Amino acid sequence: MLQMLEGRSLPPLLEREAMLQILQSEVYGKLPGRPEELTFSTVEENLFRNFCAGKAVCSKLTANCMVNGRAFSFPFYATLPTSGNNHPFFIHINFRDWIPDRYMPTEELIDNGFAVLSFSYEDVTADNGDLTNGLAGILYENGSRQKGDAGKIAMWAWAAQRVMDYAATRGDLLDLESAVVCGHSRLGKTALFAAAMDERFAFAYSNDSGCSGAAITRGKAGERVKEIYTRFPYWFCENYQTYIEREAAMPFDQHFLVASIAPRRVLIGSASEDIWADPVSEQLCCLAASPAFPLGFVGPDRPASAGEAFLEGDIGYHLRKGPHYFSRADWQRLIQFVSLHRGR
Ligand code: GCU
Image 1 (tube, rainbow, N blue to C red):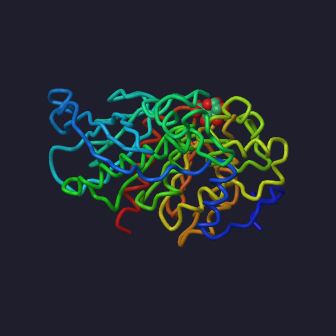
Image 2: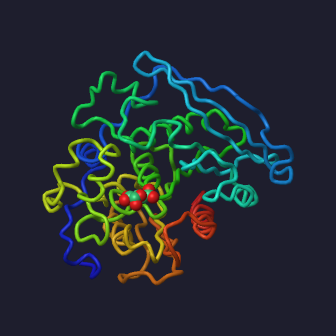
């Protein structure tokens, strides 16, 4: 038994399908299905003249979906390199639709050979308890949400899948074997869930995702089910509240989420001052999910020091010094991880 895992008594990993069933019915709710129809339209091509000094073109598009017989659309952005092809690419679930953005150093991503597709999560459905707006309003007409139905994390993950649907039409420029879904904090939880559910994502990156994301809940410091569900009940399905102060009874822990991404690759990023998310419990998740991967976590059985990164295994972990933030330094670790594993 690894020393770091002592005292956490985690449920053993199950087959991927069984873990996904549990995570959906108990935590995030059932992921909405593919839209009945889906088309993409260009709102504006080449938004910024000479963008990235001419190395990329950024366009605004819309995903036009038919869901439950009703039309629903949301905007997203594609920033594609102007030269070369076969580019690995990020699908960044962002807090804003800005390009570049303080959480997205676009030119640097382009300079490293990546393309980036991004959208602002609240263009899908607002980050509040109102279940009548955006996608939520279409799924839950007349407040019809049932206990195991999708919460908003699942809806944002669904939107990341639609952006992946668009990417799949751009095999002329993109390496469809190197799709990376990523996000910070609540959107890191979302990125992990999207990757767990959809095997087209070859890589997932969660940055400071913490409780109900990459951190093991049992024995966790900072936020736990009670705190998160009290403030953000609508992120989850209603069943999740049954585990408030009953975490030992959960038939899962967050290593199920990370293990469901196997045999694909996942990188977990923490920040040393982010006690609310709890870096140690995030690293633990890597250790606990490790057996699901061909080459699991390759790193020491002790908490990382600030600045350390363990990138060799199919599950990587890095700990940035500093506070809760999706920083350039985090992106650089992600670029390193993808570049190392891509094509391996
Ligand atoms: C809150 C919440 C966290 C979440 C974070 C964020 O702090 O408690 O669970 O990750 O917001 O999304 O920034």
